[in-house]
Every structure is written in C-alpha cells, then in structure tokens.
Length: 100
Image (cartoon, rainbow, N blue to C red):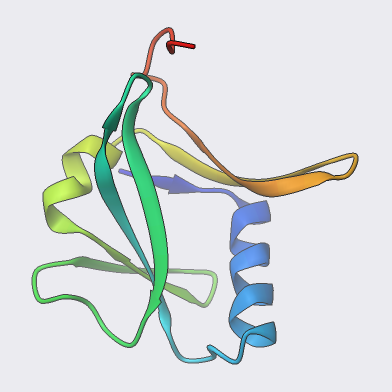
C-alpha cells in the first residue's frame, strides 16, 4: 500500500489549513507514465470519486484512485526541505533506473 511520511502528513495539514481547505480530502491519482513509472497527481476533493479507496492518517483524509492503487503500491510520498528547495517527492522502489 502507498506510504505517506510524517513530513508529508504535516505539510498536507498545513496546506489544508492555510488554503482554506479544512474538511477536504487529498485525492492521489496517476497521470500516465514516464520512464520512472507512473506520474502521480494530488488534488483537494470534497469526497471520494465513487470507487476510490478512502483512508485516514493522523487526521488527514486521503482518496486513492482505485485504478491506480496497484501502480501506487510500495510508493512513498514524502515532503522534503533541502536548503531553498522544498516539495513533495514520490519514491518508487519499482522505478529502477530513470531515463534522463
């Protein structure tokens, strides 16, 4: 199953609060595929999209696109701060060597 780190959870909480999205869920889905595996998208939603897989972690609700659940299996979403760079990262252990 998809893993979401403590750092990512804390940033999702921060975004939900500062963007006025309290009560919404984070929907995680795939958007095609690249050389490192599926591209992952995230968006705020009021509720799941019918057959999404709903889960909650530390007070943050997530809706995982059902058709993407296999592709997202074993991936980890993290939030990284390094110097002046910060942002969400998706680690895919099945991605192997990426092109580029």
